[in-house]
Image (tube, rainbow, N blue to C red):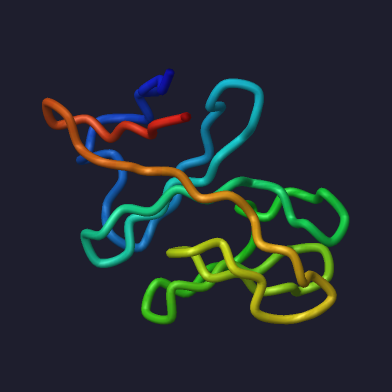
Amino acid sequence: MSVEVEVCPLDELPPGTVRIVQVGAITVGVYNCGGELYALEDRCTHDDGPLCEGDFDCEEKVAVCPRHGARFDITTGRALTLPAYIAVDTFPVGVRDDGVVVVNA
């Protein structure tokens, strides 16, 4: 059974920003890249560090781990550079009643 988790009102997540939230037992970074919303697990698969606290590039849709610089595709979770080589989970994200929600299946 899937569960929707409220993130924040849409106007509190403007383009070019990320909001880190708890979704069940995991932490997720919710990105607004040019009006498109993406949700990515906040855990680098290289060393379990906080991925979504690092830099990100919305044009390239890439998150960069602040510990060792591994890069991940925000849209798919795919690891793009070493030292990470395993993808992170992504989650469906959308807008309900002017609020951003993440679905945890």
